[in-house]
Image (tube, rainbow, N blue to C red; front, top):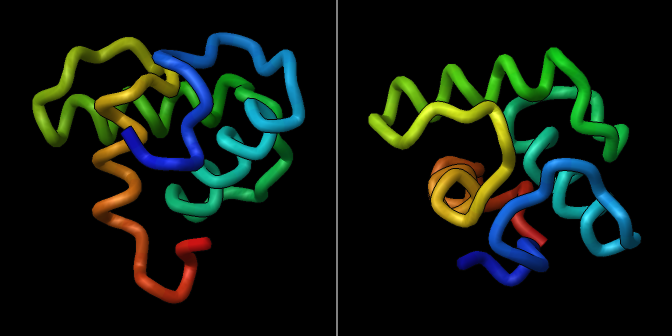
Length: 78
């Protein structure tokens, strides 16, 4: 699991670390990094999950975070 992912899955961020994890995923998906997992974010996550044959939930989880971490260009990694 990437260092930036604080727990198994994030349905709704509760801590600053979880908001930052959502922002990191949003940047990896070329979205505005708001930290809020809105419908557009869930739709993009579901699309990437489908594309890479992960379970499609639209929720930021450990496997999706690891995939996004591998897909991010090196300059966007923290």
